[in-house]
Length: 475
Image (cartoon, rainbow, N blue to C red; front, side, top):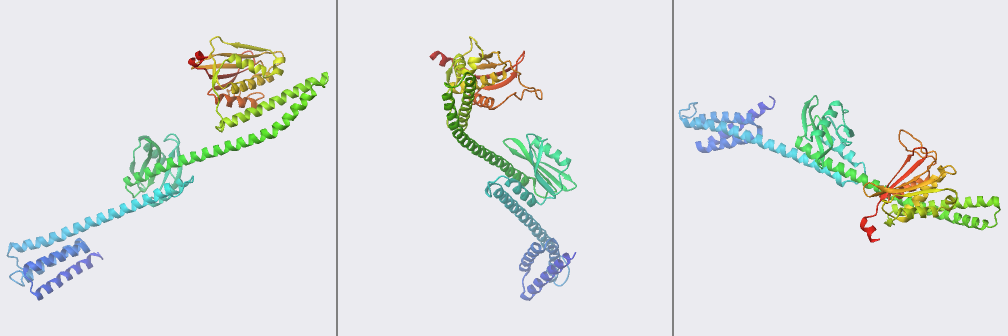
């Protein structure tokens, strides 16, 4: 009411001023009518519908009283006067409607400008501001504050919409309703808008590659759902970017770790090989002069030194392969040749223990690196020898397996492996040798497992690729 009365008074005063000026100048009916229309349009556009309607009524009175015959009397004898009245009223209504439309369009344009500004700022925060890990949480929090909601946040799915992780949340903590709605939009991959005590709640899924990776929850939202979906698209891209940044950082850390491991292994091998070589030479010099009691001890020390040197060589070979500096040299290799070379590489074990070797007639050659495969066999035989009691044989078996593989088994009659958590996950006397075996098998595309055997003892089972038939025929 405080604004309506001044508008009406101002409109009446404006029409009165035009009327006085028109009478003084002596304007005719047509001219003063056009001037009245212009003033009504101006007042309706400037002050609204009340001002336009007041101006129309006053203009009609003045036009009839001062400019239509009979003058100075409120008499409408000519139908044209009614047309003038209707024209003035229609002019005020049209002008007001145009003003309202323009104002709405201006408000919509301003809202769009603000939304575009927020989207631009969000894209800068997410993609251009920094490449460090963790920037997503900060940018998403700023975007949620810019929305102006009562509360809201960004939730990500850990493989399923039912497994939700709150990445960032502003305002009142999320409740069960939020979790259920987020799970729903994640399953159906569609935005949902519902009324709530907060006003208007909107839940928008984050879609990437046709699957929902999370959702944005906005409680008491004022922004349009279309704009929130645009924000969700940006955030979904940023989540993927964040994941790639983390993966790159992880890969870089692994690469640096591998480089450090290789450097350490090289340093350790250099520091150990020299004294081991010196010890081996001294033991070799002691062998001819050692007495009958000392000869066995000297020979045992020599075997241990040779075992350490093999371990160091294995570790260095694995480090070079993992660093990509060398690749396994794959070639067809008969299992019988590998068994024979392994026994010859272990003269101390060969002289004291019996070997039972069985190669199945249908067993194909292995498609492996002979040097690496020989090393893993030596390690398995040493492990079986330590576990087996005196007088028990170590069995070496080769036979065909499924899917173009060859199965090699090293069996002993030792105490076997312990059973923990219903799985064979520990080895009595497990040490560096078995870890080297696992790595040597893996780099050649095979598998390795340990199990107990009937009657006592353990079975070390290795499956390695078989040589292609064309390669066998060419040999």
